[in-house]
Amino acid sequence: MRVLVVGGAGYIGSHTARLLASQGHEPVIFDNLRTGHASVSRLLGLPFIHEDLASGPERLAQVLSDQKIDAVMHFAAFALVEESVHHPAKYYSNNLVATFNLLEAMRQSGVNRFIFSSTCATYGDPIATPMDENHPQSPVNPYGRSKLMVERMLKDYSSAYGLRFASLRYFNAAGSSPDGLLGEQHDPETHLIPLCLLALLGRRNKITIFGTDYDTPDGTCIRDYIHVDDLAEAHILALEKITERSEPLILNLGSEHGYSVREVITSVERVTGQKAPIVEGARRPGDPPSLVASAGLARAVLKWRPRYRVLDEIVATAYIWFKKGGRYDDSLS
Ligand code: UFG
Image: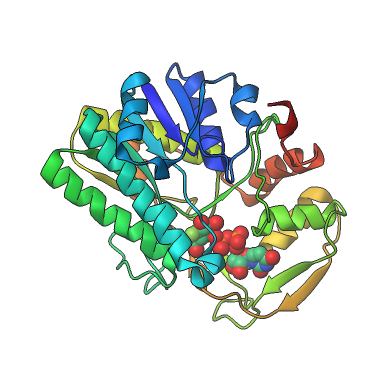
């Protein structure tokens, strides 16, 4: 299948584009390079379209028809919870309005398969844990609300226009491709595992734990970390499933194991064999205390089997990337 990978120069999109290609699909990377990396398409040897979803449905419809696209995977979004609290307009514009442009382009050009990067942030504070797909959706930050609005839009497009879609609600994406070709590079970096590794590699002074007074066993937030290649695999299985049958797929993607911030830091210490420079700090705005997936539906419907079962294995792949430098060389592209 010829798949437009929107946001394919970013972290999860690049790993998925690579897996698509290795499984015989034809991914076309589409990215505005605001947060993506120009060198990804070169490293992967894949076609690249440097465009922005903000250019509007007509231009995007042209891309879809010129490229003879069969399906779209949409990874392009801003995804920082705290930033979304301070700059909601940025999130509604990029995550909601831009996605509307893309869906309209698909409608105009008759492309009707869509895989959407949704998030556990659409649930908000857990009333039950682990969370399954029927957990109430009551997001506690603008990022989660922007993603929930797209989920609602997708259902309406499906009922009215026959769009086939999967909304994949990721928990915390982590790790890197084990050969170190692709990895996680955000500017600025805000995610826990990269920050810990950067500190242990001497590229940061310290790691601040955001909140030690949560109602959790060790007082720090609990998250469910899932390897980026396992997420990529689920996208391809979801694409196959919506091709086979028309019902919408709404699935959690997580490992079903929760790790506290302190446990993550301990895992990074184990993998690197070094002691982390920790400071205890205040809570970060918008952080729910605990997010752990029940992912039984994805396992049953997609026959999805995450390969990375233990946090140390995930951290070890991230360590490979950061030891290599943890940055793309975009100057060559
Ligand atoms: N944390 C720290 N110190 C840091 C960075 C993070 O204590 O320096 C904590 C956070 O408070 C949180 C946990 O580590 O409890 C994980 O934080 P990340 O920033 O790595 O990830 P988030 O849980 O904030 O974000 C992820 C995804 C989002 C998604 C969100 C759901 O990146 O896209 O989960 O809440 F929306």
